[in-house]
Length: 265
Image 1 (cartoon, rainbow, N blue to C red):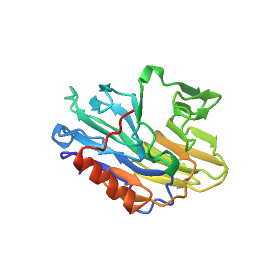
Image 2: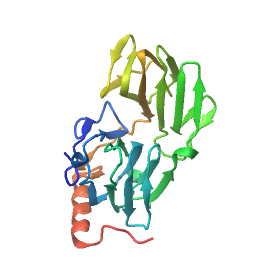
Image 3: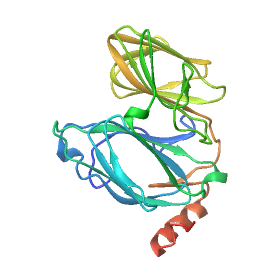
Image 4: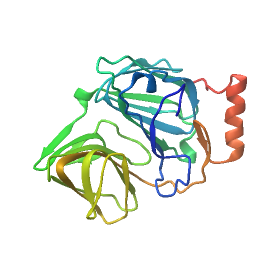
């Protein structure tokens, strides 16, 4: 349970980050009971990371300390660079279907970029490119697939973020950059990676083989695929703030308490 009382499934996070570096946390907040998610995530700080929210259904209203506000709907993405410090909130809206869901991914920032100026990228579903192929379709949020590039660019960890949908018995292949960590999170149906099937809410760590190979089961499959360049730096982490040393972490919370957390441009 996170925020003001949101029930969610944590695929990974708040543990050893070596296997997922440069990614820190992945939350699956799909739910079909309003009482499980309507409390939302009231105002809270972030520093030293990027938070990437990808909605599957429902709507979330957001606002932050640098003046951004709006609504994230089904298929939309909010890519927020907290950098030196940001305070924001994410509050679900009531859904006619009663369902709401999506994923939030935290990506670490290297030491040299942790105190960079905060910024925000909002991507509407209609502007996120997709590529259809014989076995299904790929939505390209970040990175490149089939010669099509996502709109999110110039991110220091060189990430790729795809939403892959496979038809029954469909197959998917994609090269992985040398040295990058790659993860798949299945959220619908079943898919086999390396001959082993994984189903809903399964996290697959893809060892360095040069490419990702997935084969859907009889009902098809949907999964998010993420990869990025490991930072291999020390991690000092408490709650919504991630720095490199305990001293930096303590300073961040002291500044939050005394009102100097948000840096002037």
